[in-house]
Image 1 (cartoon, rainbow, N blue to C red):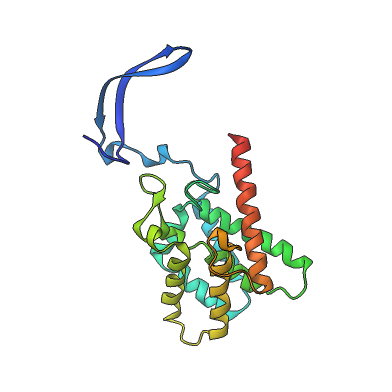
Image 2: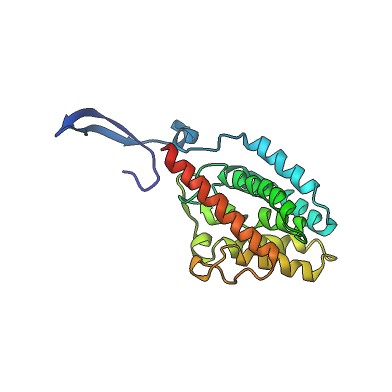
Length: 232
């Protein structure tokens, strides 16, 4: 009478059995979507998604290189991308695995980038910021987060790196003057951000901005995961 990811209403009794709670089910039925508030069943970012979205737009507006700023503005102007990004988790379970987690992760990396570039000369902050915003953007299509956190067919077959390259190439179709060398650097940031072949990275980071993106991404992911574990 019900399938995976359906919501089920259960009537029963909880009793102790060998000092552990045991549920005896008397009746159950599948619920219609109209009977359920999905927000009750998913954890979400403590931050308001609209506030985070405004923060991201401010970050993009501050990008100094006109081609990068134009590309980011074009991508974020897509209403579907905006709606999905406000909801998407950053991962199924490893880090920022809650609604709004991806946007929270991106903004955290933007703040980290601005701090770290002060300590090293020669780092192109605009390039790193663009990499930060784009490096996991494909997860809005890789992950399904309407009924449960799982992978979409595209996510299973292609993965988020291919999906975000598709997003970039689609946007670049409307920016014919975008410099090809800059496009190559952006694409390398995306396909190298996992940092190691055994972590699914097609390429290793080959210039400072790519190396910085990898380590900041790794740091933010692991610290947030550890924080979640400690809170639980």
